[in-house]
Figure 1 (tube, rainbow, N blue to C red):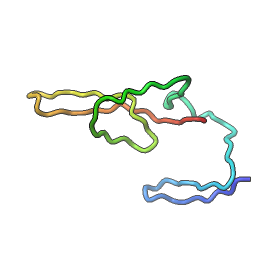
Figure 2: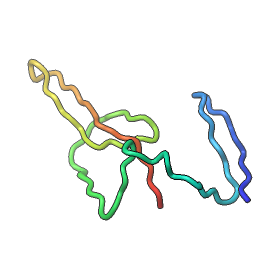
Figure 3: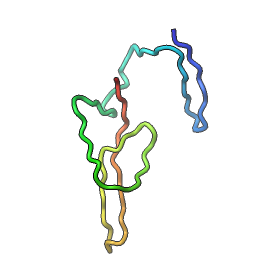
Figure 4: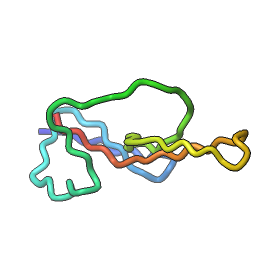
Length: 86
């Protein structure tokens, strides 16, 4: 039996601390918004920079755009929510 201890976060969300195991009886909220990892996952470690991303998301692509006079650079990130089932 799991004992749930809810706690309100400063951003209004709720987090749970669990003593024991939690097992969902439905995975119906896993849809196309989530990335399913199957097999090997490739990763390109080249390059550098700073891109902020919301908690619970993972960056799936970077678009570099050189704007107007080649002196101003703009970086856009493509990202999706991530849910990894182990």
